[in-house]
Length: 383
Image (tube, rainbow, N blue to C red; front, side, top):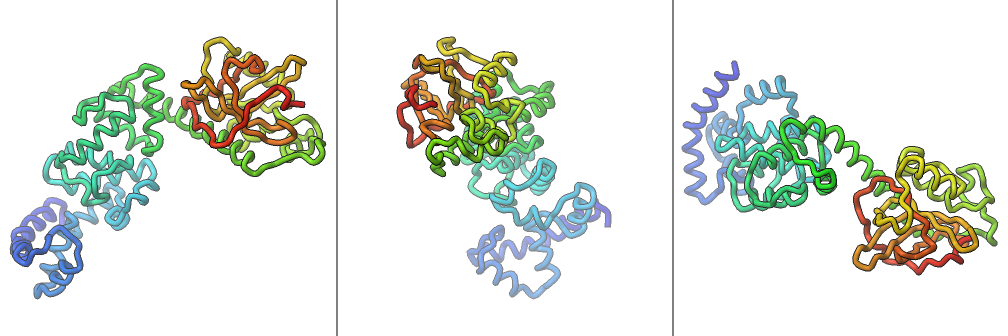
C-alpha cells in the first residue's frame, strides 16, 4: 500500500469509525482519552478490525503510514508514543527533531502552532500535557504562557505572541538540543553580546553559543566541586601540608591553596584552558595577566562565580581561592579557599578589602548562589 493509499484508507476508516465516536459520546466517555471505562468499551466492540483501526485513529496513522514514516524519517514510533516529560529530556538533538516532526504530523489544525508547541515541549515547557496529547495546533492559554516564559528566559520581549525571533529561537533550541536549564544562560549570552536571533546567524549562534553554554556548565561544576570539598571538612594533621591536592600535583607537603584551585579545575575540565595548573600564586596571577583576563582590585570589575581570586597581605604573603558568589547589593564576594587555617574554608569579603589583589576571569556569566555558611576572611588565615 502506498502512502497516498494509506491516507485514503485512513479517511474511509474515519468515516466508519464516526459511529463509534458517537457511541462513546452517548455513554459519556472521552473518545480521545485512555480511561479504563473507555478501554472496556472498546473491548466490547463486535467488529475487531474496526476496533483496532479506531485505536490507530487515536494515534493518527494506520500501520502502513506508520511503517512508511519510520522507514523514511527514522522515527521510533513506539518510543515516541510513550514518552514522558522525563523521557523527552533524555532525547538527543537528532531525536528531538524527529520527535517534533512526529508530533506535528499528527495535527490537522494549525501546524505552525503545533510546531511551536512541539519545540516548547522539547525544551521542557509546560503545556499541561506531555507527548502526543500536548500538541494540538491550538494556541490556548497554556501555550501563550509557555511562549511568554520562553521569551523571558531567552531575552526576547515577553509578549506571549509568536513572532519571527521567537520562532527562530525555538527552532534553535530544538536543533541544538538545548535543555530548559540552559535556555536562560543562552539568553544571558545574547544580551551580553547584544545579539539578536535572525535567520542569517542561527548557525553561527548554534556553534558559538553552544561552546559558551558548555563553558558555563563546566564553571558551575568547578564551583560545585570546591563546595563539595569544603563540605567534606578536610583539615591537615598538625599543619603538615599533607593533602590529596598536593599529592595529585606532585608537591605534597607544600603550601597548597593554588594546588587546590588547580585540582578543582581539573575535576571540572577547565585545567590549562580557563584555569592554570599552578602551585605558585604569582604564577597563576601572571598566567591570567598574560591572557588579558586579570582584573586588579578597584578596576571596576565585578567578579563572577568561578573566577579565581588572588590575595596579598601586608607581609607580602600570597593566597588564592575560588569565587562562588558575588552579592551586588552588599558588595560582598564569597569564596572557597584551600590552605586557610590548615583547612578548606568558606569565606566572605567586602569587594573593597585591601587584602584582595584581583581576579582571574574564567568567563562565567552568573553571580552565583550565596552560600549558607561563610566566615569573614582576614589576612591571618594564610600561612
